Length: 401
Image (cartoon, rainbow, N blue to C red; front, side):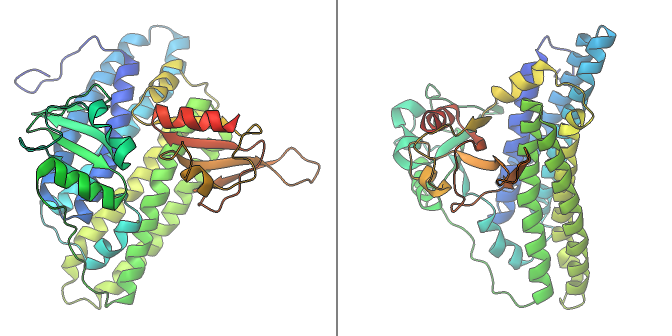
């Protein structure tokens, strides 16, 4: 981008742009909801800066795609890629709208901050202090993820973002590290990085049943929308129409939840002292529904039977957190549950769906288990759709064979 704000063409590959847009969109979702949970205006500010970066990436991606589509065949195969670019931008805008609730102090009911912790993995924005034990050391030297279970998912240095920090990434005083992991571990790492204690604002007690129901609906919408985005990228990566169909079904479920959310919110407005105080909650509900719509746009080409362009699969496969299909082929996990996986060398992998053959009914039908819990049993022949770092996914693949 030029100094006067104009976006100029740069000879970047479509793959690199798609990868950065995917990583940025996922980071934006994490940061935006975390800014709400912690009532953190600085974290909300990071979201708005990243949203501006996404605007630039979108324009650069349009330019690169126009340059790439030089024949009818290329135009057809690239058409769904335009949809994926637009969907990532929609997710970015939705995350920005969520962050503005905090940044502009629109107001949120305490019930939301009481319910969000169950739906938001603990995430912290930590400025590296000069006296920190981690300052001047690489992530490999610190071995943070192995020692603590906390992963640095992004680093901001001045105005530049490092979206996929690896073992060679060196932390410097003044860097802003975005950390994710178990709450107790995040608290310890945050204190080591900043020298300050990590504090979560205490929520007030609940007092309005309708408001609690509205909050429960929007939290469930968030969970389903994030699952839909993951499955959408998986459908593109594996060119899987069944996965794309599941994304569509999830979007319909979110639409139904939004209707209930609106009804409960309107009822709650009659019981609160200041109905205007619910504006922030309404903003978050609307933005969350937009994320599920974007998931459908990502998988739309697969639903329409248009073969995915190889550049999309390459970008998804090289992103910060990769999505993989792992088949259980007589490995040590067979006969156990996902709880066993959490306790294995592959801890850190999230299984977002399990596809398995139907019961012995003489057909070839299969079924999907979405958002499987720790008690989900693992059977020979199961297809696990898993998300995690390359290292963790590689460990899962070893355990599965």
